[in-house]
Structures are given as structure tokens and as C-alpha cells.
Amino acid sequence: MDTRRDETLVFEAQQGNTDAFAVLVERHKGRVYRTLYQVIGDEQDAQDLAQEAFLKVYRSLAGYRGDAAFTTWLHRLTVNLALDWLRARKRRPLQVPLEPAPDREPGPAPHLVSHAEGPEEAALRDERRHQLRAAIRELPDDYREVVLLYHFHHLSYQQIADRLEAPLRTIETRLYRAKQLLRKRIDGYDGGDSGGVQSRATAPARVLGSGALP
Image (cartoon, rainbow, N blue to C red):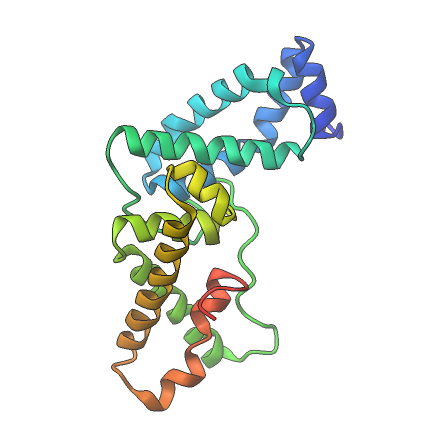
């Protein structure tokens, strides 16, 4: 197993060492595929685009100066490539896969269940996760896009605005309205039962991460 740091491999690849670049590809191909699948929502398209992603990485290596971790730089490049692909085809994500892509190297599973929870609590949390995925899938295209970029790819409001070439206020509004719609749909899955909504209202926030659906 090659123990060289990513940044060391990048430097060697910048000097023309193709073996070093091959190590980077092998090390991060699962990460790149999962990111593409999460944005695009289609296995075959994600596989095809993964090859293009590493070609773009190779061509862009000269521009990597080490100002950020290589994984951060790679993630941004991959997300941008996926969004460009979607926009060129006037498509939007049709799925919101919150689990690793099938038949691919799995990443660490999101820690959604406490070890102290019993089977009933774990089943309820799993149900909420599936409900949230369905609710995101039902969002209007513009809202779904900003939710994916903000909560699953961790772009800031300003980065999303720059990426989508939209005013910052527009991005803030879309995220706010998306959260309101998600709350309403999650409550709708409960059948409007006000007796249980309050106690379970934080489930979407746990799935989306801190700061989501406050």
C-alpha cells in the first residue's frame, strides 16, 4: 500500500510521474464516483463521467498549488463537472441517493443511529431517512439543486451563487423555501398528526446535518 500523502503524489505527477497519478486515481476513484452518482443520480452516467473527471484532473494538475487539501480540490472539480454536465443537457438530478452507490466501493455510512437506540427507534430513524429522500426528490428542480449543493456537498451560499450564476439572495431564498417545503412534506407523511410531529420534527435535521431545518 502506497503511504505517500496526496500532495506528494500530486507534486510528482506535476513533474510527469504517471505512476504517481495512477496511485491518486486508484485511491480516489470511489470518492469521485460516489460524488458524481449523488449529483447525477444515474449509475452508468456517473461511471462514464468519472473517466472524464480524472482526465480533467490530469489536465488541471498544474493549477493545483496546495492552498487546500487535494481532496477538497478534487471534490470541487468533480461537483463542478457534474453540474456542467447536467446544465449542458438541461437536466436536474432525478434521484437523491443518500446511501453509497450500488456495486461500488462503499464509503463510511452516515452515523444516524445511536448505539443506545433500540430496534424501534432505529426503524423509525430509517423510515424518516427514506421519507426525507422522497421529499427532496419531490422538490422543484431549483430547490433540489441548492439542497444537494449545500447539505450534501457542503458548498457555502456564496459558492452556490457563483456556481449557479445567481444572486446570493436568490440562493438564500431557495434554501429557505426548500426547508419549508421539506418540513411540510415530512409532516404530511405523518398524516398531519400534531401529537407526534413535534417530537419527530428534528429527524430531517439529523439527516441533512447541523443547521438544517432548524
